[in-house]
Length: 123
Length: 106
Image 1 (cartoon, rainbow over the protein chains, first blue to last red):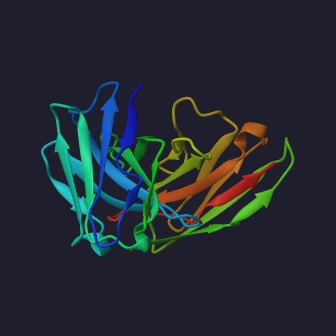
Image 2: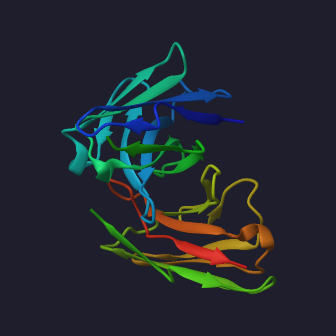
């Protein structure tokens, strides 16, 4: 059973960089047909896709965040990470990591998720 | 970005009721719609993908249908453990986008 777990600071100051890591267990991390994504959900709002990274390091980001977001991957530790720079209160949200499964032909199917971690942007 | 509009935003029903949640896409997303269940403090759970394909382990009381721009998630007989918020998501184009959610109470 694939499991994902987010980790990182729960409080970030405005203008600083938010950094989160997702640790994947249960296999499939370096397997073909998958990529690794970050999503977020501000309180009272819907889910927002932030970006994804393939095992070869190729990335895609949400156009509205492209200038501030970076996702990296470390296959030696089965982890991938999110960095979001110049944060404001609007970036306060529950952040989720998830596995994207495109092997079946559906290009953005998220079949396993972490429980999420709340990140608050405040001084 | 493709917009996914979900309705209703919340509903209250009784155990055993049949529930229908609607999602409208603009523009068309063909058959690339997935549905997720999110419970407080838990990892989101994929219920249905490609409009109507039930994810492994999901009870058969959940079903989906639709094509193009109009999609529905049906819970045929509501159970207490179905209390959650449900989201549709289009996977036709990048960025993937989600509906606003439907909060289901029993």
